[in-house]
Image (cartoon, rainbow, N blue to C red; front, side):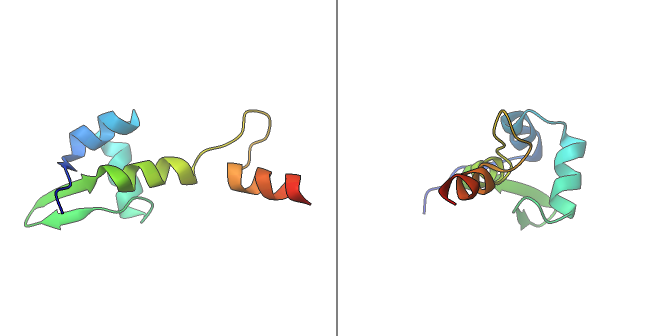
Length: 73
């Protein structure tokens, strides 16, 4: 297991949000994190999963998975 872990500032930059917003998302349980002592770290895979879960289509304000389900029906 040779994953790179990102600091809070690095993870916030990766997502294009402030460190404060990242803290809010983390505390709400929206983004997985790793805590080692007082350090809070993030896996890139977890950040990418967060992005995928929050991806919306251009023409509808619904997650892509819901749009795809509507198209199948």
